[in-house]
Amino acid sequence: MSVATVLTPEVLEQVRVLLAKQRIDGWLLFDFHGLNPVATRVLGVGGLATRRLFVLLPAAGRPIAVAHRIELGRLDGFPGEIRPYASWRELERELSRLLAGKTVAMEYSPKDAVPYLDRVPAGVLELVRASGAKVVSSSDFVTDLAAKWSPEELAGHRKAAASLKAIALAAFEHVRTEFVAGRTPTEYGVQQWVLEAMARDGLFTNDPPIVGTGANAANPHYEPKKDADVAVRKGEVLLIDLWGGVRVDTVYADQTWMAFVGRTPPDEVVRVWKVVCDARDQAVAVLRDRWREGWSVKGADLDDAARKVISAAGFGEYFVHRTGHSIDKELHGSGPHLDNYETHDDRVLAPGVGFSVEPGIYLPGRFGVRSEINVVMHAEGPEVTPEGPQQDLVCLDIPGA
Image (cartoon, rainbow, N blue to C red; front, top):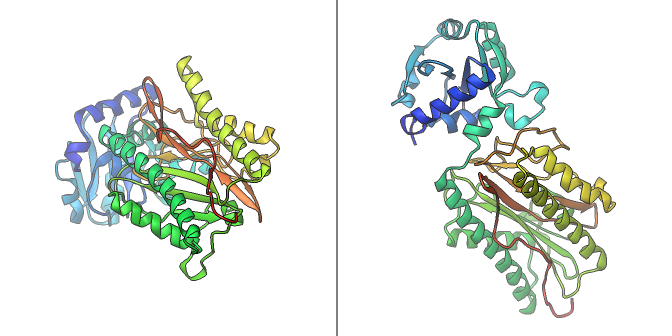
């Protein structure tokens, strides 16, 4: 990936159209030490920015980059003007020359309303404003140009989604086999088994999966520990949350699967599982229905839809996170999230973006249940991955359970 292959005339025209629609003079991308993954994705620059980089994509004319003299090589193939600087005085002078009197969009969210949009440090905003510019949020630019999946990324995601489903189900069978053989499986042991299975399938991940049994499944971000391992126990729920992709730097698939370690789960576990599945499916149904009718759908709308199901069943206080997160080259990406709880994300779910749908109910000290699928938006409507999402708890037929 390079600037020349990513910042194409077609992309620049898309930016110009958006800028004209919003009456903004330019999109100002900033990066330093990878603080802003949006800039990296849109610009296609290689290596790590160890000096401040500013790139203006203007409503008219060619792009302009303000880059440090020792890092000009990162911009080989840049389709515009490069203005070098070395000292801080040169930087401030070039920014004033470039930005005075302009309105520019940056990765900034007023009052940090959407943290995944808030990628530019407050001091940099002060610097840009001191250069004579007015700063507005680049929210729509991020959705349209930084969060959308390429055809290659979509193909890789589909492949990873199918593999993760098979691995999760095989992990449950591994647990059953261990018990039948008279051995006691552990959370950390199952986690390592999953990682080995992913490696065999050619999948990469940035972090190991979550494996939680019983009360540990009630901790949404639980992490098994080798030096404090926990046995998987008969008669309890078992949660596996796993994510990965066909490359390290691509769109991952992200799923959560649930099992009961025994033949027949208690009625309460079955009820909670059904409520969670109904909430998941209701979010997707609302999305499909509104899309079919030609309505725009916001991330907050789907969070409301799922949360309504869980609250109506009496478990509202136990659903303690958003319904879903954006997925792009970051697992928790910069695009629209399904969130009207932790934040109010009113960005539209546009064709090309992807996200998770993962409601959960967590009963502290007892057990937790989550079901996670992924959705990618197409012009003709949403696509759910993996094919055949989980509908029933996997019940492990274990002697004595």
